[in-house]
Amino acid sequence: MSRITIANPDLSTTQRTKLTASIAKTGTALAVQNSTGFVADDYVVVGNMGNETTELRKVASAANINLITVDALVMDHPVNTLVSKIDYNQIKVYSSATQPTYYFEFADRLPVHTSSFTL
Image (cartoon, rainbow, N blue to C red):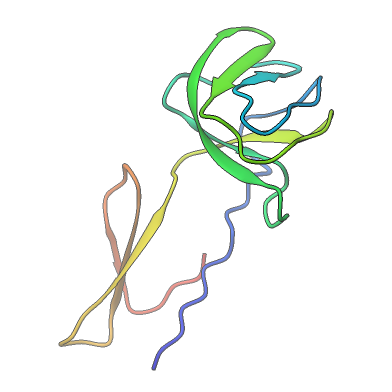
């Protein structure tokens, strides 16, 4: 049996901001330092990738410079929590029954074909 390990994406070069107020679970209005670069239908990571309380949420709107509205949160987040834009919300991995090849794709992107890969 093959094992494929896919690392969390590096978000250090994406659009980022921080919360200016804490927000409780079920909240949808993220008070942020600056919402420039975030638009409706983007996805954001609330928290640091890999932490237990980090969440992926879809942006409903970012019409106000200091507010991003997202789908309801399931965790509490304190002031200064990182909010990062992410270009996709899933990775799909496929295998082939006839060749030792894996296929993977990012949401809203073309599939990539490879016999080995590192993310």
